Amino acid sequence: MLAILEYGAGNQTSVRRALSWLGIDSVITADPTALLSASGLIFPGVGAAGQAMGRLRATGLDTVLKEAVEKGIPLLGICLGCQILLERSEEGDTRTLGILPGLCRRFPDTVPDEAGGSLCVPHMGWNEVRPAGGSTLFDGIAPDAQFYFVHSYYPEPAAERVIGKTRHGIEFASFFGRPGLWAVQFHPEKSGRPGLRLLRNFFAWCGNTAGSR
Image 1 (cartoon, rainbow, N blue to C red):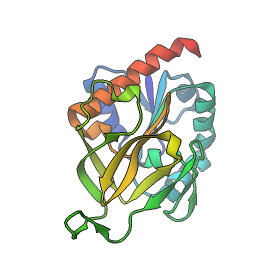
Image 2: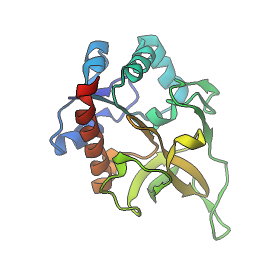
Image 3: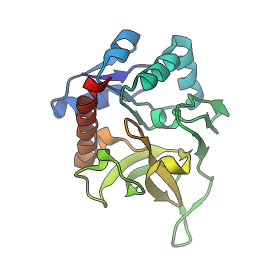
C-alpha cells in the first residue's frame, strides 16, 4: 500500500483519487508507523514553504521523512513536496528538508517569452517535461507529453539530479532525484493519462523494491 503524507498542506485527496482510479490502494496518514511500513510514500503539497516546514517540524514528520529515505522506502515529492525536499527555499528564506541537494528559487517578476512579451507568474497550465536523463517513471510516456503546473517558485537541484526540464520563459528542472527518490514540480494527479502513467510506474517500482528492504 502507498502512504500519502498528511501534514496540512493540501491536495492529498486528489492524489488518492487518482491512485484509486488506477486500482492502487493508498492511505492518507500522518502516523509514523504507517508511513514507515508503507511500500512507498507520496509527499504532495500546495502553499507556502515556511508554513509547510513549520508543520513538518512541529509534528516530527520531517524526521520521519528522512528516516523513510534512509530505509530505502521509495518517495515521490509533488509540487511543494518536491520543492521542500531541497535544502532551502527563497520563499521566506526557509531552511527546508535537505534530503536532496539544491535550492528553490522564485520566478522573476517579469518572465520573457520568445516573442519579446512576458509570461504570467505563477506558471499555471499545461507544459512539456523534456527528458534530461533516464527514469523508469517516464516509461511509456511520450517525450512531448503535457503535464499540469501551478507554481511561482521553481526547483534548482544539483545538475546531476535533473531528470526532466520545462521552459516557462526560463528553463528549470521540473523532474529530478535518483532511483527511488523522485521529485516533480508538476501535478501528475491532475495531468491526465501521462500523469496517471507516472503514478502507475511509481507504484510498480515500489512493488519491485519492497522485498529488498
